[in-house]
Amino acid sequence: MALMGKNKGNKTVTVQLSDETAAMIDRKLKQWSLKSRSEVIEQVLGWYVQPSDTKVARRRITELL
Image (cartoon, rainbow, N blue to C red):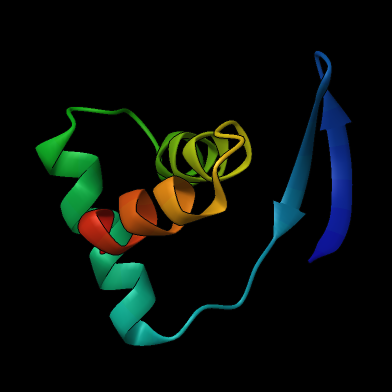
């Protein structure tokens, strides 16, 4: 990720993704009725880092993808 800027306590980053990953993010964007790709990424990362049980976190990520 390349740091591009800063806005209201948030950082703007540029990420290069495979076409498949970008398509998955776009599907989740619609399914979850979110407004931006960054919200999808924040949601997934939030689920990944919160649980103390690593197996639970991995299972949740696998279910999302």
